[in-house]
Length: 227
Image (cartoon, helix red, strand yellow):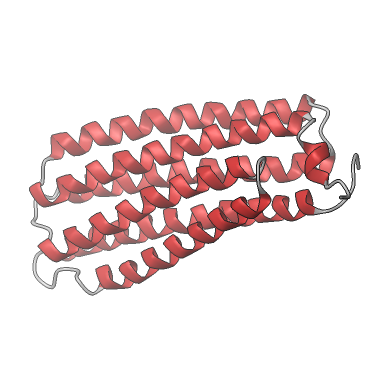
């Protein structure tokens, strides 16, 4: 059987860089799990719980930023083909954006809870479902990146899983829009709308990251050795 580019890629510094990007994706997963706990505070209006969650996510985001910078610095020095380095750098940046966006979502929730108004029960439930699926989506991003070094078919399956979860979150996004409160202050409804938008954007960024990974998977599946 003719060798694929993957066989060559595994022997280069690019392979360890891809694993580092998977570790960065784990930060996105951890942030998404913490966001689920923050969302749970919406119904109770427990500002202290939200503040603790925001602090935890902010710490994760700082770690993610540091990891991204280290990955990009390594790519600038490693003996990696320009084409691979460009794709890996894009992937690292896209994954880091997920963490940043989850932090933005948590900050939006904090601003909303600070108003002290009650969030409709149905909307709380829908937002909880959205963040639960977001946590699963970030987990799928991790699996997609890691499996690219083992099985390209498996990587493609995980990428499809990310796309499916993003679509499910899209459906919940429109459901949540219909559950925005018709009573209370206009500012409260606007802030809740922002929370919905922020969660949906985080889901979109997960798919954006795997779009870049898809480009790399195609390259790895091609025949050939050193470029």
